[in-house]
Image (cartoon, helix red, strand yellow):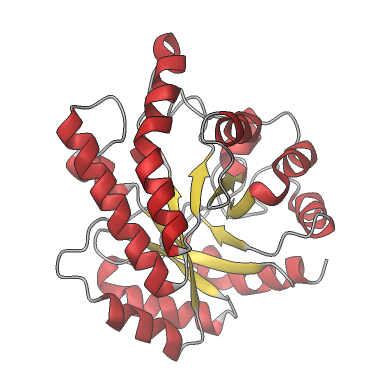
Length: 273
């Protein structure tokens, strides 16, 4: 099975990673269809007044899937976090993730656990990782029962002290979570450019735990405007049998026009490698 491609679209609050505003997300879906993408990465903060059935119908009408639910907006908007916060905030965060899991079950998607896991600090990293594994246990159990995959994102050291590299994330899943089938890795090429020793080494290290890829160049621009060797990376992904989604999470740089114009042809080039 070949890998699939998606792009970020936001349903409630605008984000720098979407080429369309929340008010225009349907236009974003139309653009994805026109550019022969396979699905959309849905940025969802909460489920207040959100008609998921309608969203699924809009995706279905265009032959689009949902690659994963991007969850991080609620950290900035509501202060939600799994660690480093009072117990009641952790509980609210766990409940929000369970709602994301319910939504993912309906949409046939995965759920991203990125910065909403918490930032931690270098001084307390071991304790923070223990706290995170405890906070994730009910989510892992719930996701497993519902057939949903949770994607832990490896995020660079300038944004969080925890799980910066692919290797560290693999270690956490295997040795602190017990290597559950329902937990994999979201590998973001921007973060990997900062933290990983080598792209090919990371792909081999993650193996079947690699469940989702974020596409962005080394400067967070659209591919081709930094120094990331995408052809080598995608050849390695194919060689290792990766058949999940690769989703664009780059800025609308060097310009929105470039992103809207060149996405379809760039994806086709990667498909043909």
